[in-house]
Length: 220
Image 1 (spheres, one colour):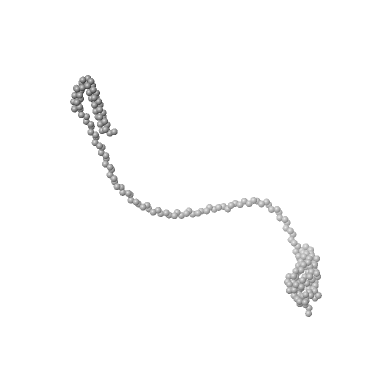
Image 2 (cartoon, rainbow, N blue to C red):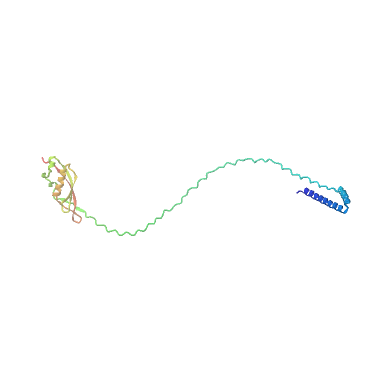
């Protein structure tokens, strides 16, 4: 409630109170016979009493609205270009690495080597035929199949002579071209040839080999 409304309400209250008092006085005057005087006096008082209401205060003036100032937006400034420079990679450094230490278990000491075997005996004296090897072959030994086919040629052979001077093995080293002549050569040498056995450096008879050739010719 404003101040003006409050004052107007107060004046009305007083007016109502005065009217009520007048009614009471009038009632009392009617009862006591003083009504006429009271009414007369009240009328005179009413003529002289004028209730004036206090004029309301002038309305408060509102402050003028603030002037709107047009604000210019700040100019848009493009940011400077971002220049990215490549940072060179740091050099790769390698630290020297020590080679791994390999611990090998200690092997037990090797047993002493056995004594070296004595060197084998050397043949110092070769086997020798007791006769010319060709003398062990005669015309009667010419194979009949070789005669019929008129086969001739030279057979090379190698004989193995045992410690007793006899031939233990015969090997054809070059063929005559006739198996009959080659077989006859080895058969005759094994059965007829005799040798003085070879001897080693200890003076003992030992094995040895003898190589020879026999030529077969048909007699005219």
